[in-house]
Length: 489
Ligand SMILES: Cc1ncc(COP(=O)(O)O)c(C=O)c1O
Image (tube, rainbow, N blue to C red; front, side, top):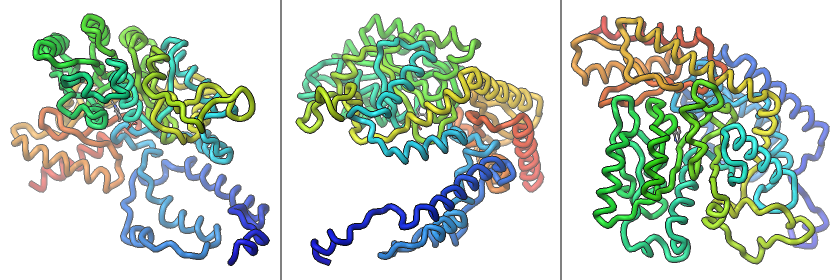
């Protein structure tokens, strides 16, 4: 087809028959509402079979297909095999539930398809408002800056880039070699792997992350932190930041924030908090005093897809000093210069506060859900998740077949099936087998970790659909499978 003909027969991706598509769209909405409504009748996990895998290796046709057929394929091959984090018996890793309202909000956001970086349009203001709500609910300084990111990993890395770039303003231009000595930052041994990722992508190398030993409650040992900083200074290195954990990924431990802040002040280090899920515990009175110190952090990373129950992806970084945040990323290429009027006359472009230029409208789901449910409901749900963990802890302590593996400080419970006198390696193998059978039999999907080299079943509860009875089913399932394996030995 030549260009002239193409212009005479212009096409687009819009439907030929809008009414037809509207009917299908309404059916999709109805199906998804029912899917979530009856999700507890489904197994928590269903292993995808060969048919699905084979189907998902098919080549893409040159010619398009009927939308109805594609929707049918989705219902047959994709929808029956979710990860499970929408189900009341899912407690793996730290993965949130999502919610129905957010499904609608994501559809509305996709319809608007706003690229949320620069310009005068509503999405930029919505993101500003959501960040403002986050600041106020966590008691963080109203004049601070913030950005929504894909999740906790990106929020942590972005915060540490701000810390690194402000250690010496020459770094942005000349690189870290301008410092002339290795830059070092500190986090506890229990910190999340994204901190090592940050060290690597920032060009510092993973040795730059000093792993401070933890105490018996998996909290950073402050006296050791201080000694490590002093030793690094005497060795001529350049310490620049400390990462405090508010909710470690393994056990939910909260580091001693007040002491870490003091040390940061004493040694002029950046005080960064990884509060991926734990920061949200500040919403409830029991944790308010302990978590007050996150208000003083130079930067605070947390997720909204964990304990605020929003669907993937949405994390947030707040930075106390807006100027320092901006200085770390802002650029002024000729095609992104703000104007006095017209579309490019918006607020300060968000790309001045992070690595991404093209960004989706993830703020809209937060905007809808926060308003619909109100903070009081979130407080109650976070409390409910903690209460459920205490309930599970009590059930574990009451059973001679189960052993609690770490203190329950927040919403994470680590335990195992135990047989007195059994070899530790055999216990590891046994508990791993229990976990895999729990999943395969669709009893529940907790995850796993190692505590002091012991394989541990781990429940991380950021699930607004779980009920007390779901935890009863987990305990009964672990004991039943454990007893069965024991009798087969
Ligand atoms: C303590 C902690 N930090 C960081 C992260 C990374 O967050 P994300 O998975 O949203 O990137 C997690 C994830 O579970 C976490 O638990």
